[in-house]
Image 1 (cartoon, one colour):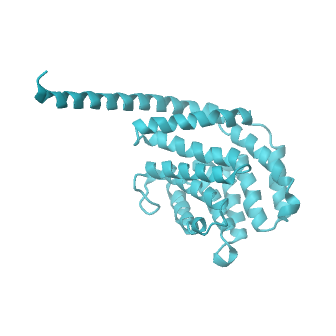
Image 2 (image 1 turned 45 degrees about the vertical axis):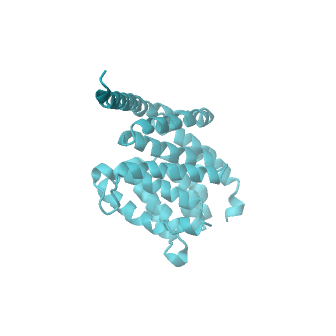
Image 3 (image 1 turned 180 degrees about the horizontal axis):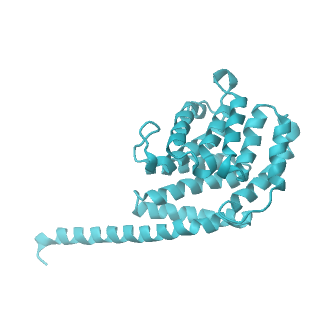
Length: 270
């Protein structure tokens, strides 16, 4: 090989290696995307709690080879955000916060510069997870002024989602608006009654049987309104709900466990 040709050949080999890594990452991410519903349909919450971290780490590894893979970014955003909500909030707020921030970061990468003002329909899922992660982070960091300073960003993003894809993730935009009005202090525009209205809308149609919404309704809006009857009604519904197989089974089972725990703290909340 002539010396002058060494660098171009090496560069070609390196580029080929990068291309192969990216191809492998995309094939694997496609397998993950098709396989995640089976994870979310698990009934054994402890099994899912132990198994999911490896999947989340694999997504991070794959994103190192294919950083612009939007499907993988969305799955990572949902995975980190969901893991924090289902398994970490009740045990370790610091870890839950770090997972929410990671999830938000992946979703914002999927947005690729789009904002609540400029987002199009193709950005709806990324906008949802970026906003849901942010709302969840704020909720468990209410004593942090920097976190509370992010509250105003929730409303325009949720309203945009209502324009783009209102039914996504079991009417999730309505749940975000419910959280927004429940978290916000009354003197700064918080309104528990509006929070209740939005959670009620989240329970319409495809969101009626999504038990996590009812848990959040009780934990956030009912407590903010100091409505103990509503609190008990929603949580008892969760506990008595018929078991449903499918993509919400894991979330439903986690909601049952969380409902039982928070009911035991009723006297501290009212």
